[in-house]
Image (cartoon, rainbow, N blue to C red; front, side):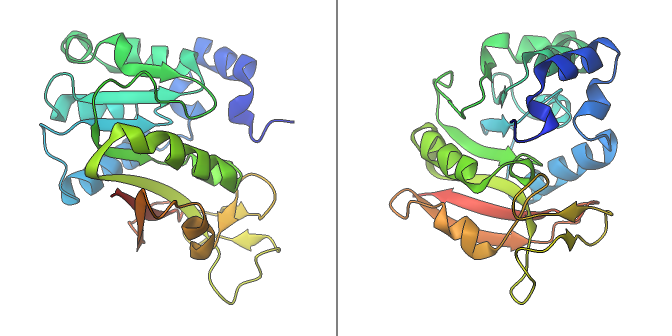
Length: 225
């Protein structure tokens, strides 16, 4: 059984062919794309930085980041090649594709980043681990560490179960009408769960919390040591 509908590549491919590459990744194309860019710039991302977009999908963030960053600075990974291609061909213009060769994208389901041949300064996974069991985050951190510059930061969103809330009961998230679960998609976690995923010889965990996400997702930061 797959963890979420996002793993059904036939269904995703059908949606892409129907012209729904923006909706498949959750919609709110402009709202969340702009939110991510404002957040990353506020956190210090500059045009010369290298950015990895984990779960880049059809380039909701990517289209904006490519326009902002210098050439050869945007990279993306996703398990659905059809989504990346739709974004690459339909959301990037000719100038954007010239700045970002196809070799900057990796397609896999196991958070392999071997396609990267340069250290990343910034990485982000927006609405990725909200759909996955916790060990996926641990694997991602383990595999990403060799590809991050020292001091580089990896931002990841999650749905939070606060201390005092019942971890094992369905939880209505504030702001977006989303109900989360401890055992099925969409998942919620405690901050202590996120800390558990961290190898303290590689990463420092830095909670951020609210970042104005319209569906109530919180933000965590993992800083490469």
